[in-house]
Image 1 (cartoon, rainbow, N blue to C red):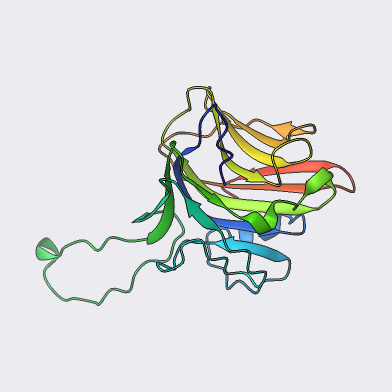
Image 2 (image 1 turned 120 degrees about the vertical axis):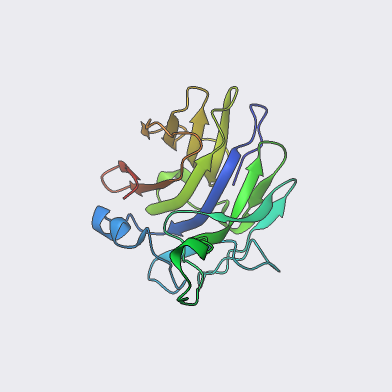
Length: 212
């Protein structure tokens, strides 16, 4: 989800977006960030993997928070770490004549920094005021640093209390809430990174995980 403010929308790829209504532990995130979810996992309130060509914004969780692609957002087929490899038959041909099988190909969302976004209206109130524990996960691959800044993801309505992933012009992320705690890890362009952020309102603890 990109906010579309004047500074510019996110330009890059994003895939396997997950939203949970609990602050997951490091062990839980590391256990399945390379794997595929069924959508029935406890606490999962959003799972967008863009694998339904007829409905690319389909939420595969039981919550059914389906998204809508807007503007120039496109679903493309591309390699990504951790995605399921296609089935391939075994061949006894000589090694020199074998054509390599492309591994780990999956559908994912491409945003070009124009007017493209995926909007999930049903989650606009999620996390309002910072009182909802949650975890957000996704595979993300920016094309490069924006001229000013861009939002790869926004959870909740824009403004105070919402939680966001903001990419700054220096290539660092600003992860957290508009009026609360933030973390600022770098996000290398042209490289797939699994990003997870958790918020525990009880202790007001905001935690980030890169690649597990």
